[in-house]
Image (tube, rainbow, N blue to C red; front, top):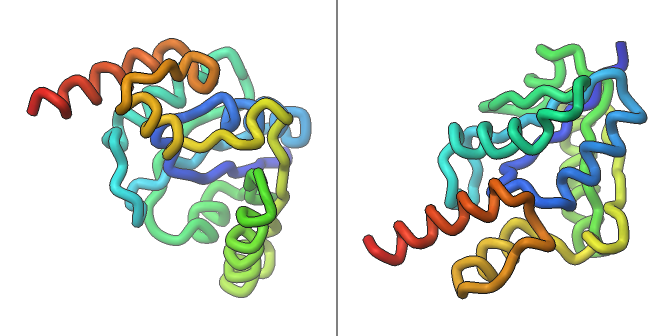
Length: 163
């Protein structure tokens, strides 16, 4: 069984993420969406909220599971018997950062390969950070995230404004 691991913070999950997950299901027998427990970014959503949002978004994909991970990605990949790390590339600026990560992961564990996928054209500019900024300013994010993620953003951001 070929297992692909798609890691990230998914804060929140976007249609760009979902596009890559969907396409990865055709390359691997099983895809594990690995949500980073600890991230240098300050997430808007808690780990349990991110797990729930992603799980709901991929529920229709039978060969996709969602898990949290902590520590080194290469250790998680090894524990799950993964064959490759899946990463998205939107622009040249992504490539430089992702290339460095892939080389570092290879140095830590030579067995771990990285596969880069580019999102479909409508999602090439899309990022979780941009979605959060648009939502925080009252903009419409319906073209960027599933309905349940929109609702969660609205709840989370209205709570933040009231606090």
